[in-house]
Length: 257
Image 1: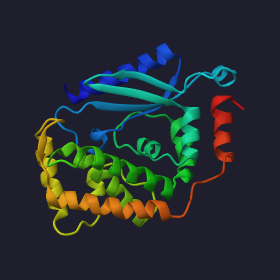
Image 2: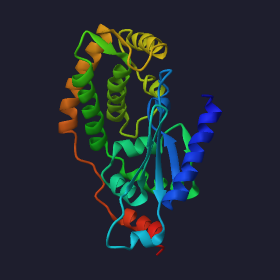
Image 3: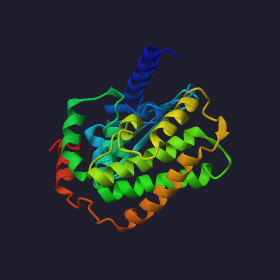
Image 4: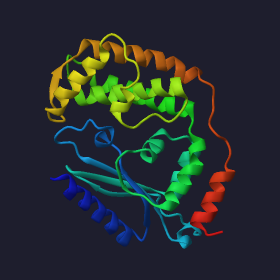
């Protein structure tokens, strides 16, 4: 499917969601390998969106589900979060939410969302993000990278969070979403060239293709997992405890105060 066609299809789906669910989509982005710039020929589209319900839905005792899971098939994976859930997750320093907020592939945005995120940037947490990315890399390694033949897609799924950890450790700020930008960090001993070789093979293979281990990449992943196991435990707690900003946004946006 042509890129223009898929974007139109995604925008049509978002309009359908707004109509059928009686919500307003504030923000919608690509969140998976296509946002990272390392998709395979058969990668699906991982669309994530933030939505706002009518005021009365935020004033009822029987709370409405705060997630919309709209579609999951071979082409599209579409789901979204209610703005109330989103604000709560910002308070937790949710690293995935910060990724969505900084995705380079934006299908829809609004001035309201941009204003919300401008205030929520201060809830980025170095510790929460390090724990998230370290956990993602460790889980990927243990589940998919212990055999002699591996899916190079899973190398990306381990390398990217480890490179994000490195960026956070060195810069103390939200890491880039793009894998290419993360690779701009200094990598020793020809590792960059080996990763680029892996990506070239991956780009020509299917999502489930198995290939031989790449020893240098494998060793880097193992070493970095060990390193960030320690750092994620010992780094100082820095989650922003303040609810006042988020409560103010919630009252203004959701209940119209």
